[in-house]
Length: 218
Image (cartoon, rainbow, N blue to C red):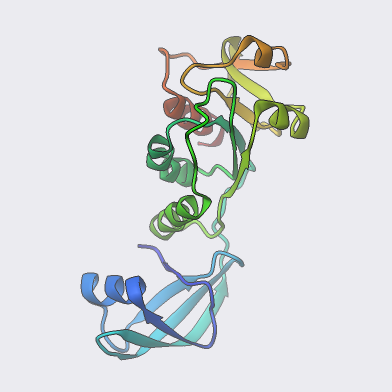
């Protein structure tokens, strides 16, 4: 773990619950040791000294803070037609580590409408990923009710589809739209102005999302 997430980086803080259990029962951190904390709101890395520990909580004192951003160098926005939530949750940490800045989850024509994403759960997954990879900002997440809403909000986008041009290794300033397991409907394809493809076999939706992000960002 590169740092611990804690929302209130005050001069003195008290850790309890899961944070206390992880640090002092799993990692066996002891009194007077130092730990790094981020609030994921600013780019400061806060260093705390453990002043006191008991069975339920730990008292920490701030001894230093350093402006130390560690965030993606390129803004990359992914539009992703919603698939089964457990598959999204499984691949989300990888997209976070690669450096995706924003994901717009879209209920496309072939997305199953009974699939429901829980934003708080996705945020927890991203926080845990940040703690492991060291990223200092939270990926932006939004949920759009239809592909029509996506097209209206982001009229200038790039679609990943089989009949497009081969994707290049360069910076793109437009969202990439990835289809669900069934791809895109003919009605949705009418909105496509720029189409790219990957040189690969037929990919699952989550494999395509990771491949596009890695191609552009890494």
